[in-house]
Each structure stands twice: as structure tokens, then as C-alpha cells.
Image (cartoon, rainbow over all chains, first blue to last red; front, side, top):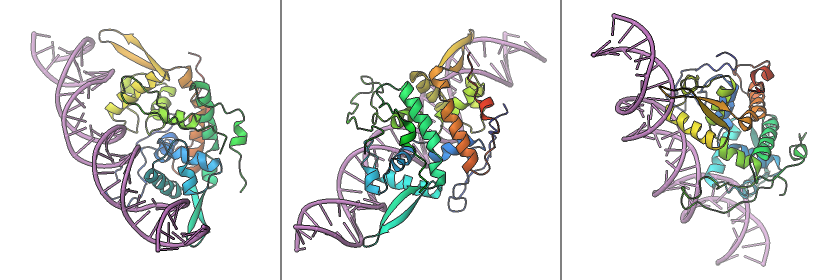
Length: 140
Length: 140
DNA sequence: TCCAGTAACTTGTAAAATGAAAGTAACTGG
DNA sequence: CCAGTTACTTTCATTTTACAAGTTACTGGA
């Protein structure tokens, strides 16, 4: 079965502090990507940042009601993965605005494909007519 | 925040046998799609079916080493979601071949986008040069 | 006929992730 | 001074996952 190049690494992480996150399941790009964004919440955070949300509280107000500890965790992981960064937009008190990096903005094609598939195959999803206007490539 | 149409349903499932799986997080197509394929394993099963694998044991032999109970669970869920079906290819003993439905084959754009993103942004992933040849639209 | 082997699962259980709620720290505005 | 907001962290019960082992049903060979 050649093709997607999915060969196992067969390596385990004895200590998380030594090998931070280098334990990929395989060299397959699908598996490696799912190691980062393959869960119920991560891509929703990316979606919201795409939609223009910037702060923690804005991200928390989404209709899916992400638990606050999960949101904090995903923001940390997305930062470590280089998909988002944050900059302080005020001091006293220190507050951060989150935003997508180039790597994060490149997920637009994935999001668009998911929107199209959902609209086509899942009834009662809100039809998005002009997807490109929803996921513009912000030049920053 | 208009746009993706993500409004909460605010409904809970008191009994799983009564309301099978109708409890979506929102009407957002991204959230609804992730309710189905948003985990570490589901899209890998779809990938393998795309690559030509058909049987349970073939799916189990992938380099990511999916646990057997997870594979059985995902095959059930994918069937219930209408993404795959199965047909018996022999009796005595009864054996099934799994295959993607139209709905499942329509995930090719999602997979392709993920492959491209992984190849571009995750080092050491196997570079896929000709993606379209890997995800042909089998007319079956 | 006996036995190893294969396919397709299921079951049991420990570990990890998730979800809901509450708590905390630092400020603001009245 | 006190209620309110923001951005989290902590606790803990529930759910999901991972790993191992077991089960059922057949095949093919000695």
C-alpha cells in the first residue's frame, strides 16, 4: 500500500518534558495534521478567529459553548503548533488578542472544504452561499 | 457575529435510545461536520478506504495502529452517518467489504486540503506530489 | 482428525480527555 | 467600597481512548 507514505515511527515518549510533541503517529500528512487539529474543538477556534474574533471572551461566546478549560488548552496547543499567536493589546490589566499566523490562515482550504461538505450532506446546517467572503486571506 | 450561522440548539439528550444522535452542537456546518469526523481516527479510516483498502484487517494494518475496538466503533459510526456501507463478499464465514458512499467520497476535498496543509506546514511528512491521483473519484 | 492460523470482532480495564461548575487575580466604573 | 468584567485555573465526575486479551467461525495442512 504505497502512496500516502504512512509508515509508523514506532517511537514512544518516555518523558513529555524531554520530547515535547515529536511523537507523531506516522509520516502521513493526514495523520500528522490530525495529531494537531483532529478533535471536536480546535478547528472551531480557528473558525472563530477567521470570523474576526480576537479575545478569550469573544471565543467563549460561540454557540457551541466550548468549556473554558478546553478553550484555554486549545489556545495553548495552537500557539505551540504555530497556528496562532497573541499580542497584548493593553496593559493594566494585561490582555491578549489572539490571531492566526500564516500557518493558521492556510487552514482556510480545510475549513472551506468542511463547510462545503457539511452544507451538501448534513441537513439543517446553515447554508453558506459565499464561502470565500467568509474566509478571506487577510493580508494582516 | 453573523455569517457561519452558529446558533446553539440548547437541547439535551435524556435517553440515547430515544434521540439517537440528533443532538448537534449548532447549525454551523463546521461544527456539525466535526460532530461526525472531528476526532483523531475517523478521517484516517476514510483515507484508507480511499487508498483502496476494503476489509477490517486491511484497515487495521495501517501504520498508525488503530486500536481494534476504535476501528470497530468508527466503522459503525461511519455507517450510521452514511459515509460508508458494507457488502458481504463471501459467506462461510460471512465477510464484509467496506466502501465509501457518495457522501464519503465527497470528503476527498477535505482530505486533499489536509494533505496540502500537512505537506506545507508539518516537517517530515511524506510529500505527496500528485494528490489528485491519490484521491480519484471512483465511479464504482 | 487435529491443530495452527486468519478474520472480524467483543470485552475488560486503566489511563487520558472532556464537561460542568466553581474559584481566582487584576482591574474598572459607579 | 463594591458589583462587574476579563481571562483564566482548579476540581471532580463522566466519557472516551488505549491496550491487552478473549471469542467465534472458518480454512488449510500434517
